[in-house]
Length: 293
Length: 229
Image 1 (cartoon, one colour):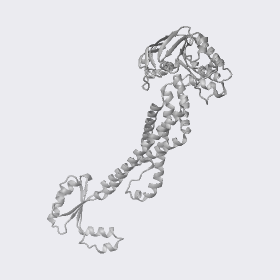
Image 2 (cartoon, each protein chain N blue to C red):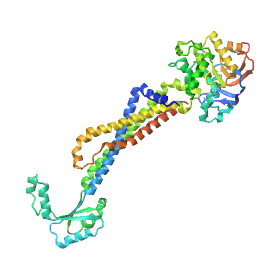
Image 3 (cartoon, each protein chain N blue to C red):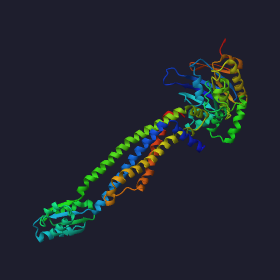
Image 4 (cartoon, rainbow over the protein chains, first blue to last red):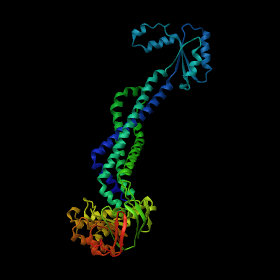
């Protein structure tokens, strides 16, 4: 079989119904962009979670009038927990000094803070941040303890939002993939129809099924590959235009891990695979139905 | 070469079977006319030989193969041993005469040097030497049918099937086509030709199989188109 001839047939097929092919390629591109974005969001959300969890501490705030015995009780309980990595004690005076520094640019706020207003507290770092509840329940009911605060709960809305974005991206991707599949199927069908004289003669003189169908199959798969490549291009463009401009300050602060070009290119093989598989399947099923062999 | 044993064929869209218990044997090198009115089953008969259709009952043997048991992927090999000619020529309008013939050889994977050697030979055989670079629409109907025959014969098939090959041609041109088919038959190729053309059948004096409503009603070794015709 002449590979060059077969390949040029595939290109010729795409060019012959250019509008349809373009629609198919663009739809594949958009859908795969959404798939890729969804995957990146998931990865990034995971990274953000990891970063925050390693930095996060539990704060145990004490009552105002604590006896030394009660304080020792808290220290002893914490020391007895294997989960606890280390404990830092912050006295009222230290809390006051820290607040002076933290709110230096808000003098109105500082004016209302007296040294006695801030509670003394422990900062507890855990070996496994997800085991928060074990530590919290161990100390919560001690007479000295006023409140146990897990900073994770402040981040929960962020993670919920990211999860929502990811799910939405996946749904959009799924709908787009269906559209892409149908468009590819239609492109292949139109080509098969426009070449029915040739395929009719081929069938009659005994050309093999493979020989007859391969150009059409390649045409469909080519649309999928072009779409996937374009999709990766769209993601790079999106990174340059949206992420690099809008979120740059957050990247610099290290609050959000930055998404690099290689992160996106790392998705490329997977997107390409999806493109090839759906376009290949769409083409095969179409040929099965519309091209007699 | 061709043997049909108690072959029946019904289409789901029709109450009457297209073929009904047909028993026909055709030897290698024979020339057989298949006659009968429209809808008598001639086309179905020919389509069964190519395994374009599968019989509802009975067995079809072609070139030593039992087509009812022939697996799907062996059908192309079967069709390579059978050449086909139709009333409407079925040439590719955007290819030249030579390219049309070459196409049939290329798509079954014949090497280029074979194709360039065979195409002029077979064009000469059908009387079209020198017209290889013409486009089909520049040729007369008779010449187009010669191209179609050249294409069907290029791979030297054992069997040539012709479905009303003279149906679109005037009587004078038809005679030329019949002479060509006769010449091909004399090379040892079995020819099965479905036709309505009484004059041709009568003049050739070859075997005639007549179908009516899907049944073989006559099988004569040196027949004419119809009784008293």
